[in-house]
Length: 98
Image 1 (cartoon, one colour):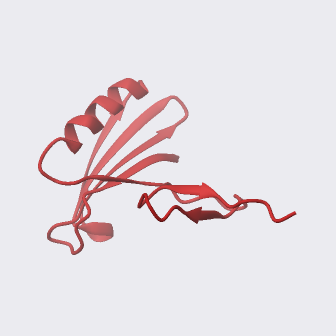
Image 2 (image 1 turned 90 degrees about the vertical axis):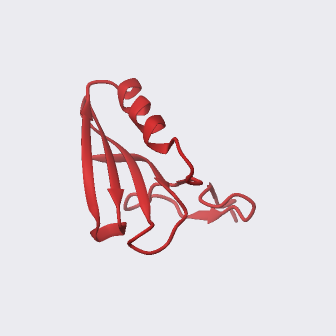
């Protein structure tokens, strides 16, 4: 399964933290809505198309929270990235030193 996107509501602690994940596996799309951090409670949604999954993501991100998109963690062997200081959660490849 490949994680495509991750959003976080910007709150710390298990009482306030919320996360939404968009993942894909073969031709299926999955949305996870998690409350309470890594050890919190999750609800899962499964779809046939990315459009259906993205519609659910938009609905879950609607509301008073200030959602931030976080970059997915690079897979093993992926080139390192540098954090962009003006845009939290946005990463850009490091410039080549060669």
